[in-house]
Image 1 (cartoon, helix red, strand yellow):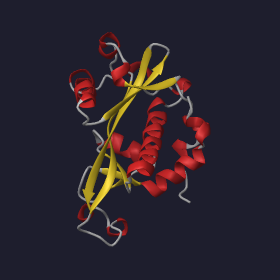
Image 2 (cartoon, rainbow, N blue to C red):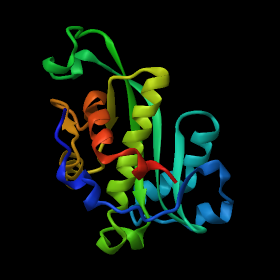
Image 3 (cartoon, rainbow, N blue to C red):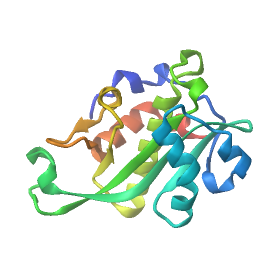
Image 4 (cartoon, rainbow, N blue to C red):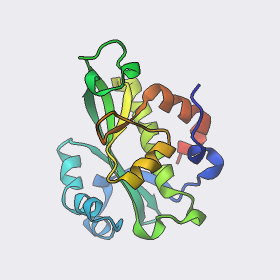
Length: 193
């Protein structure tokens, strides 16, 4: 069983929302009222996310506290060629495409970022996204959870949450075997709303 990263331990996280809903359930006013403070993520949220969700490019999951958006993440199916993976993760098939789940975007409302009294909204959202990838892999397969951090600071944050760096790439991954182990240690009640 993989050791649970310290930042993912249940005592270190509290959920700062009361439900997770699909973005398509939101009003345009609610969508326009959210800002993370990161121009790239805010541009995606305002200009692309709803379209991407509607045409099936990704699913956009939104954390709500009452009528306010606490944050969101996207998840979609993906693949990575074995040659991009460390040899230990190629399953003996370096040319095979390995099915994966991509956490494409993850953002927290600007006023909630770094606020420990609300728990780590980002860490809790990441755990929810990884849990979603585990659930999806049971239904549709998959070997990895992948993401591309926006910068080195976030890359370190994801490493602290159990993600590994691909050699010669900014892409990071977590084997689903590890993800399942982490989710078992966190416990199902954390994910029930």
